Structure formats: C-alpha cells, structure tokens
Image 1: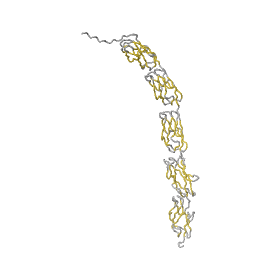
Image 2: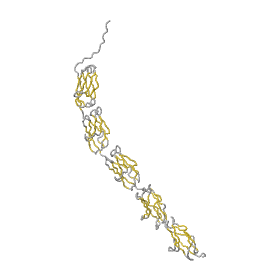
Image 3: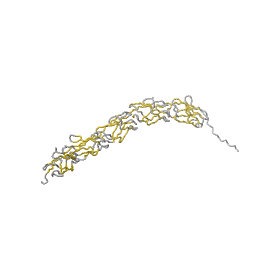
Image 4: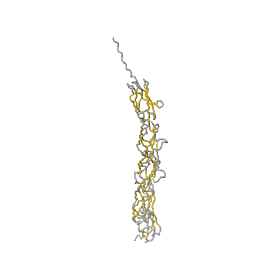
Length: 467
C-alpha cells in the first residue's frame, strides 16, 4: 500500500525588508489622536506598543497590536493617554516573536486654549459659567479674577480631550468695573484671559401701599441687593432699633407681606429707610399715613345748663389723650383717655356750664396723637326754674313742702323766707334733669296777710282761713 502523504503545515512568511514605524502626523496637540503604521514584522505576531520619553524611559504602555499576514502593522489610531506632556516623545513597537523593534519620534505641542463665557457681565456675589478647549487632558483648570496671584475663584478638571465646562463660578463682592478673568491649566500653564464686567448694585424697593390707614400692615418688595445680605428697615430715620431685619435671597431680592403694623403716627408724609449691610445702600420709600376717621356720640344731645354730658367713640389712636372743648371760644371742659383699641364709652363727663345761652353749642373732641378732631352740636335749653308748694295759703304755722322744675342740673337750690335776704328754710341739690322733689316740710311763721316769697318766684300767702 502506498504510504500516506504527510499533512502540509503553514509556513510563516519570511521577514523581508527593514522594520520601521511611520507616524502619519508627527506633530500633534495634547488630546489629539496619534495615527501610525509599520512593516517588517513577523506575520501574525503580537507587537507591544509603548511611548517613551527622550531618554528612553517608558511613559505609557498602549494596547498590543496584531501584525497582519504580510508582516505589516496596519494603521492604528489612539488618543494620547493622560500624562503625555508637551515636547518630544518616541513611539516604540516591538514584535513579541520576532524581537524586531522600530521607533518613531513625535512631538506634542500645546495649543492656546479657548474660552467662551455664558455671560460677560454680572454683579458681584453672583455666578457665571464657561466652556473651554485646548487644555491638557484631565488637568485642573484654575479660574482667577484680576490677576494670576492669590487663591482661584474655583478649579475645574478638563476631560480626556482637554475640554472643560463649568457653571456657577462664584464672583466675590468687589467694586463695579472691568476686570480680566484668567483660566490657567496646572499642567499646560498657558493662561487665557477674557474681559469681564462686574456690575454695581442699584437696590430699589416698592411698597405694597403708598397710602396707609393708621395701624395698617405694611409690606414691600426689594430688588438688586447683594445676594444674602442683611437689610434693616427703619421708620423715619436711621436711629435706634430697626422695625425689622430681613435677608435678600440668592438673587438679591426679598418680598415681605404684612411685615409690621404702623405704630402711632400723625397723618401725613412718612418714610421707610432700607439699609443694606454689604452694599451700603440706603433706600428711602416715602408714603402717606391717612388721617384717623374716628366716630363720636354724646350721651345726650339737649339739656339745660348743669346737664351732665359725656362722650362715646371709637377709631381714635390707641390709648391717646383726648380733650373736650365747648363753645366758639373752645373752653376746655374735660380730658380723658381712649383705651388700647382707641375707643371710649361715656367718658369725659362734664356739666353744661351755668350761663350757657339757649341754642346750639359746639362740643369738640381732639386727640393728642391722632390729631383728629370731631365737633358735634348740643342744644342748650332755656333755664326757667319754677316751684310748687303743697299749700299756697294757710294760718300761721301751716306746714308746707315744695318741689321745683327747670333748675340747673346738679345745682344747689336754697329756699328763703320772704326774699333772697330772708331766713334760709332749706337747701337741696337739683337732680340731673333740674328738678327738686318734696324738699322737707316747714311751719310757716308770719302775720295774717303776709306774702311769703320762695327764691324761684313762688309765693305763699298767710291768710285768714275764713277769708
């Protein structure tokens, strides 16, 4: 039998020609791709790929490459790894089986970074954002204001391509004006500056009302203060303890409804003063306090001199002192206090003066705090006293008593025998309505035919009972 034919085995292609590596673009920028290819290696073998510095020290090991069947290294494209700085470097490819190696030089050049801001003007204590490119991969990028010294405003890391994006970069509280923002990569050390305008603050305040009734609740809205700053609110001028303290929000705004009740104030022009602690702003907001509109009633509206009169009212200043005046000459007749609600009931009582002429009499009330004044008219009745006896004639020793009408309320009434200069028989005080009732009983002394006079023009005649 014929012997079996041996199975043929694949024979590697012989290596022919020199071994070398070719870099498509030997000058690249940080973060760019490195493209290379080569030939002269053993077909199908694995090749180690690394990057070395100018002294031959390995800086980075890359993924191994597979040599094709024709011994060529087909084109490979990689992103330069982090840590490959600017300057000259060497790409080293080494066949794992053949031991053949090749090197190719390339240079990393740093391009000037580019920065774009989301705004080129903002107020201090606010924030801004930016985006940038051209930095070294994964380096810290410092943001500085006005110069390269001092602590940065903030630091942000670039990505693998050297791009960086950030929001909410804080601005300090500084004077308004034009400044330079600097962006510096800690590795690339290529500063980029961008002009930036810091705006000043122009705070303003709007009141919820500019015509306020007494004791009204006041509210207000503020804009353009320093974010987070404390604002004190004073009534009138900056002295003593403020009415209220508040804080602006992150946008420099505040809005307060029903912040406080107005205290006792005379009507007319008033103002609130808003003082910002950081901005130093003092904002004045003027408003008008409307007059008090109190009510007033009398306990009675007509009476003879001596009649007791008092006042009832509300809507006056709280706890204020009030003065009562009578007549065109404004004679003060009473002083009294309103309660804590500005009301009073049957207060300031006085008697209609004796001698008040019958007719309309003005009664006025004026408040010390409210400065309000209300006038009412009182009808003074004519004073015509009269008296009556239980008997109008009789023998000596007749016992009589008497009543009277239309005297002045509360006045003392005296009874005299014969005339005003005669002996006083009795005295009493007239009631509030000016009457006297059954004033004692007195035996009448005299002679037959005498006419006995009682003050008040009432006569008693002593007569013979038979006549």
